[in-house]
Length: 427
Image (cartoon, rainbow, N blue to C red; front, side, top):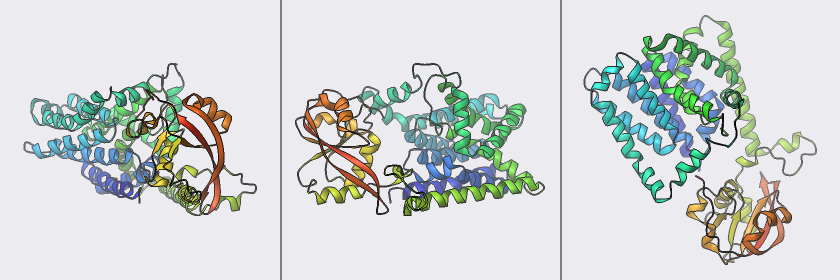
């Protein structure tokens, strides 16, 4: 149920992609652009089903692109479509900061495309920008009240302290893998051809301007910082209409194109079936001999619901305990499994939202039940021994996957949490 809103939202994103490309080119191009959106794992799998801000971001950006196309084509003043564009960009900015480079791409298009440049003499684009900024203002106010913690955290990722000359190549390779390599190669060719034609071809130039600022930004960031391969996804997503147009134009007369499309559909469908069935049924231990405990490759996709049952059996949930994880990801899993019955904190150096909503300092003086996969008493004591009077080992819990033991969750009892004046927070 947690994933259902994101699945429904991605269905809307698919329709928006189809509608946008159909109006930009023609319906067949819109169909294949929507199909490519679903075929690329970085969209159809992660943004389409995972609980991530990328889902709302993609939907809002596609809505903004559709409204922008209609605003630019408006025969009259286009006020309604310009304001709708600003509203959608505001939603995108509230979803994730990576909406900003796309907004800059709109300005780049208006500056460089001769027909579109006339809009710079009118009030509509500026009103749209003001609306988007106004919608984003609560984020700025919140950051100002919390020492700019979110902006500092995200900005700090751009400077890892060391130069990585090969970083852009690694980032491109990772993006290609997440996107499907053959689709990514086609996309790269389309972008190069569009760059060569320039503003003389307004439709392709619009897509180029919307997509390239995001792609180039993270190529530059990868020279100094660590870049996750899905960060540039909004850029590649907004250039997908180029792929849809090429496929729609070539598929009838080129057997190789039809074969590639069929192979893509087969690979994506097979991959989805394998992953989905493994997550639901956990059949891999039946196939692989000597499948070691803790080697479950999809444990991150499994809810730790067995945790609540085991703690209730031990009568731990009725003792007023406070549960701690060492990573914010594990804290989220534990919090979901326990259903809010007990407080959950994160002791790690990067507690994310737990550093704000449930700070460890608020539980000073209490005994803390620490849950940490693959940790030992020695490692826990080395990391957190100075935060407690003492730490002792408890019998571990077993996380089940489809009724089978999948991972051992080590338990430790931290006696009397010290008064922690500050724990670093990341967002």
